[in-house]
Length: 234
Image (cartoon, rainbow, N blue to C red; front, side, top):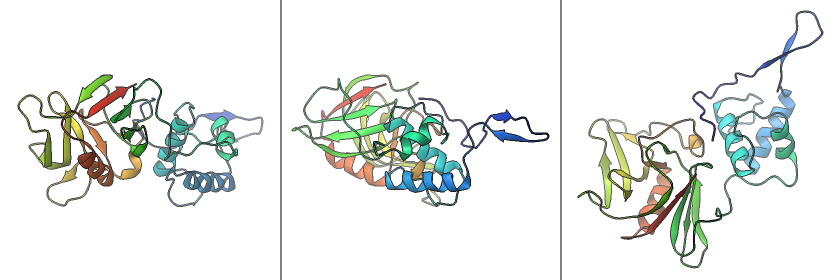
């Protein structure tokens, strides 16, 4: 997945044969942008207000759509992305098939390429799924098991980074400190360090763990027992 270090418009420009005029190469009209935002919201991609302005939230939604529809994750709406988005065959962002090659049975599957996680029961049914933020430099593909690691507890309701943050509903599955947890919250205010709508993109990077929404962190806490399989793929 392309690393989005900054969610800004930043489009390339195309010079046209009209004196003094340049237009974005991938520009859409305000009407088209509104149509795209409406469509993204209907597909569960969370584009935010339908205002015709392609800001950070709409770009994050576009990345989620591109991920779910196997497109290059540029965050740009125009071109192939817009065509696919408006087509009847467009796939939803919030409901995705389990990736092939992750085995069977009860397990948690993480796709780093999609920035997505699935909780799958013993019969192969998806119990919950949703966006994540991780850091592939720390967590390598492979199969892991939840539980205590390196002398540290398997689950910690209110874990801490040792400084200003809480890592709530921490569930450990890889040595030594890697686990699932809610997007970190500030100890002083209780606010998250970033919004839920950034999940499912590479607009942020964790320090090794898997960040999820508050709701998903609760589901993962309840779903995991000692030895629950966690399959990580690229």
